[in-house]
Length: 571
Image (tube, rainbow, N blue to C red):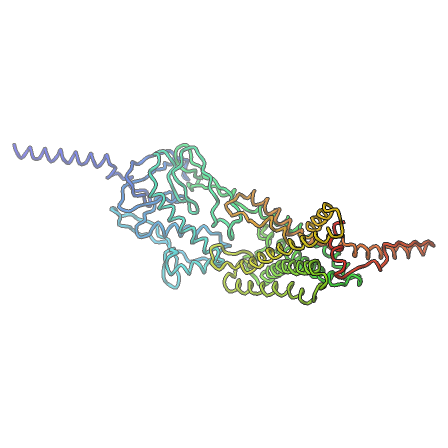
């Protein structure tokens, strides 16, 4: 009898253990999904999903089963959990970061190797392990490994490699955040990494907006645009008819933003070219205008013309075709495109150095009129030599350290900060010119008050003269001194770019109008030519007149009339 009691007691214990295990899901065949699962205890939840490829109704299973290793979810085609054991999650998400880079942003494709592996995580699990092969060795996609150099070399340039590395590290941050956060509601769309972007638990029937990631662009984006990811009412992320989990990146395109900016910039440069060319012709044509002041203006006009011309070519030959698909010069990184960018950089910097030279000259004429304008060659050195030297230094540094994308952009992740080679001198020039303009205005106001008893009239004339001198001194660039960060919306950035490109592109237009076409000396010579032409026609017709405004003796130059000359531009 006692033996029977023992048998019955053992049978009851086995039934009780079986019931407990079954209620846990510990022996359920659904305890592990097709690839890997996240390491937290929870109940398996079944939800109805869309039709699969075979037409059968598919079911999405939300897993958070027990595991001795933490696990994080990967979306897209996988729609499953990856274990962090043996850096599996890190290696595979990094592979997908590389995989999603468009082919035109790689110099060559790595040889991808796919193996089936088994991780000992309480229960054997077969998983795909993606690696790459180089020099008869296979390596994981891991930015911390020495083999990462092969990935860097396979990309179009170092900038693209940096973004892939950034994507890999963002995936690890996403996983850590998912493990640290408290569990969401059971009906939520699960926290996941989609290959580019991290998403937290999301309520059913809602749409998540996010800032488009850097890896989606060539180079780094200038402004922020937003993508969307939809969570369906059944608590699953939206998928397409092939079962691929969807994230809407279609609104992330910068194409229209850039094309609008480039066409606006090109139109500004065209206006400057159309006004600078006749201004240069007039100074060269009339020998009476070949005085020191006009000669310095002529060099300034040449710098402005070179900047406008080469920036126009830069926009229409390099930047616009990059978005219209008509050529791949930027990707090819040819010597010709780098020469074009170098010339645009050099003439752009020459405009700043010539603003400094003109400012020093004008300041000398007004503040120390008795000394005259000084030696012309000194201003030529100030205007051209620093611009050429600094541009050559910048080009050499770019060729050695950042030789990609035709030298059009600077890598924000690179500590070299080569843009400072040309930007710091601009900051120095604008500070010096501010001081010179302030002192010039002070002296001009003092002299005008000395010849005019009406202080209000003298002040008004000095203010008008100062306003007209701003483009010569470059102080209009204070308006766009602050550059919005890439976190600002593209609408905000586009407004800024329109203002900045307008001020920069129209500088040649404004300077040519004020310092040539409105100049009394130039207008005198043009009137003289018109008078002679009309006189010749009148002689042929038997009539002739005299216009005293065309008397060449009225032409003045030198320091003695410098105040009157400066003020004359505002009459």
